[in-house]
Image 1 (cartoon, rainbow, N blue to C red):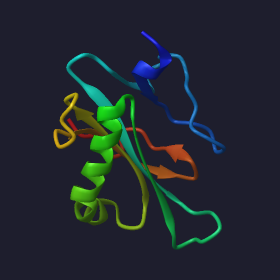
Image 2: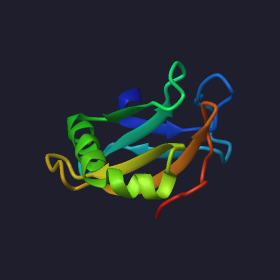
Image 3: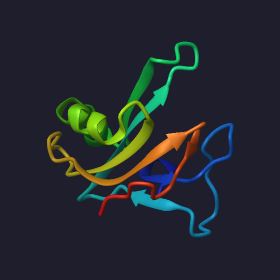
Length: 122
């Protein structure tokens, strides 16, 4: 399995999220023939405090397309849940079905640190 076939979410230090050995702090999502995974990330723009960046990316093309669709369809729900806080959401996607995203993990992000399991989904 290549490095691009997995997504590891790890609590990082104050400078950036980091990958670490499996010490209990890691959530791992693997791309398979049946599933792709993707992230939706909201982070604050450091130059303009009241503005944010959104990132949508998948392990494969299906995940990337599905993450953008999922954000477009669920932005109001995200606002209700997270307000102006930074967050990360992971979705599971069926390949070749951009509208099949199911949330499997979510967490707040603060000071570039992923707060693991703050709002975990099933």
